[in-house]
Length: 382
Ligand code: ATP
Image (cartoon, rainbow, N blue to C red; front, side):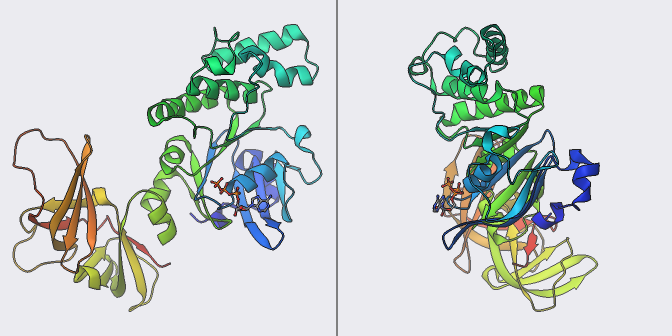
């Protein structure tokens, strides 16, 4: 689904706030002549984890900072829970932000770090103590209250920062690369913890990340950004299975892309002549494009079958190509094959390593056939 399709009529915010807890409408941010965020419109639902995903400099942090009130939009409006934020300063917004660097106070204990915001607000020390204990329990840091940040692991520091951001019970929590400082294993573990904390508290999370795996794991929905614009909004599977364009297909996961010309449309899908394949791709999905139009077919590596023998008897048919295995990378749970097809192009194929023993595995420099089902190719017109 395109970003534009997410924008509902302004009346909906008043009548159906669950549909749009945060409404970003035509927001642009310029720094001098440079457009960092370009006419973004986006609705974020109450209680969801929305991930803003994009490459470095695509405008993610700037958009987040405008939601928090640290930057003012050059144009457009931001509504949170139906209220226009144009004149609302950061401290009056129902929002908290957890920054890229957790920025814990190094000289303060965990308890003091978490209590800091409450004390600033004049919460009594007995109440603050109770709320801090509650939130440390939620992030599984009970028993660490007396430690200083340098006495904690990276993952523990991250959880303290999260406790500090959550202790004031914001309705909206903005997280900028929350897991960037953690190693891969801890990051995976913490992603699941973050999900369970979010579900327990029902806070709406907006998470900025450049890590697509993180976005896919955490996000109820993702917004993919490129050069200040939102190029696609959808669930992780929508975006992976039906990317809107070549940028998204390439940015999310690995993909094999073949340029071609529409050869024949019909009720059974579309056929595309691809010079690089020296053959025809038949995609089941229908696409609105004229005969002869240039399009791109995107096929994910896990959707390609590799075999020693032609999958059909007789002349080569659609959705298949011959090649030679040039590289094999063993990854444990799966293997990646780089297969050079006759036009010279490299095609990436992944296969799960299910079998142990059994048939002799395909080796480097073996001649193979690659084939795929008509439901696998995605046809992109831009
Ligand atoms: P990253 O993943 O690298 O943090 P990002 O997607 O969060 O990137 P932003 O920090 O939003 O990107 O920056 C978007 C663009 O706006 C960048 O080109 C950046 O250099 C520019 N930019 C951000 N803040 C300012 C500023 N205060 N003045 C001028 N340019 C800025």
